[in-house]
Image (cartoon, rainbow over all chains, first blue to last red; front, side):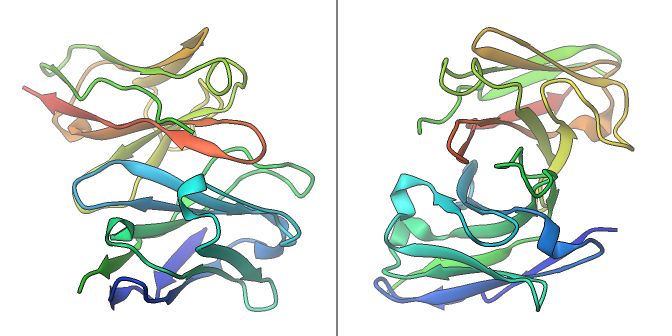
Length: 123
Length: 110
């Protein structure tokens, strides 16, 4: 079955950088779009970014544009989220999720989710 | 990219039915049949309960159902059980490969 395992979270100072990874297995990773979704402590879910199956198109929420970058390496079955210029308000659990849409779709919804990795931005 | 509007909390007794609303706009909920619902227990990852407004993934109880009217989607849970106590989030496609979530609803089973 689908398995998604996030890693790379930790404590970082404001203005710092971090790279999150999401190792995928149990499905043909190169055929599906992928999402990142985050959840600040005690708060709701916030969609962060989406990347199409082949990495040619990426989309993100306005609050992270220019600071976060989603990417993927289909040869390694791994999704990434590069976090730069981190702010206190970026503190959250970051989840990766598989979109069920086929190759020619622009995405449907976050379907299968990983367990998340915690990013804490603190001085 | 404004969050969808959900009630902060709902409650019901075992065996009863409850409905959680999710209000968006004509740019998201009202324009696409791509509303999904997630259940999240404390400390756990969200779990997909409903997709494409009213479809249930394999393994999800038929006590969970979804619907949509105009800019408002709804999740109904019938025959409430103690294990249904959790946070519930709606999500809608908002065009141009972007998505928006609701603020979440805490369900308490009395």
